Image 1: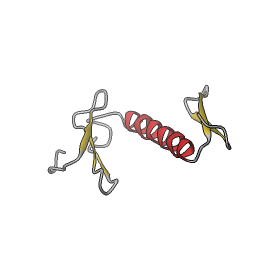
Image 2: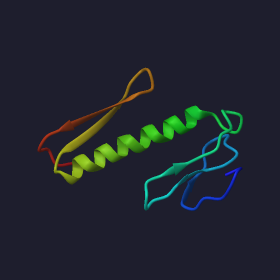
Image 3: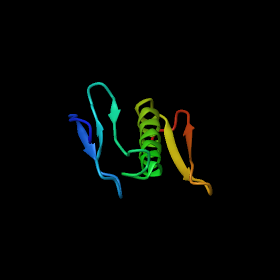
Image 4: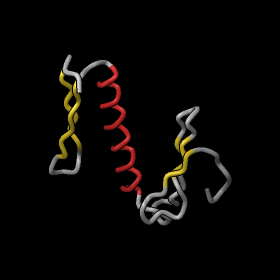
Length: 87
């Protein structure tokens, strides 16, 4: 980070000066893009979207359900969970 140090899992995003850093113990996400000057906030949005999709699919599978995803025309992702269908 520009203003200090953080520890955790670092994820480098395309065009970002500093990585996004996750503290795996607390779940906290830290980043510094200086209001878009050091990185496009849309790249962070994409990362968070992918994380949410994978987390939803994992939780569904852990409960014995089938989860599928579909990319929509507007860039969003639709996750469908079929109850009781093991993947």
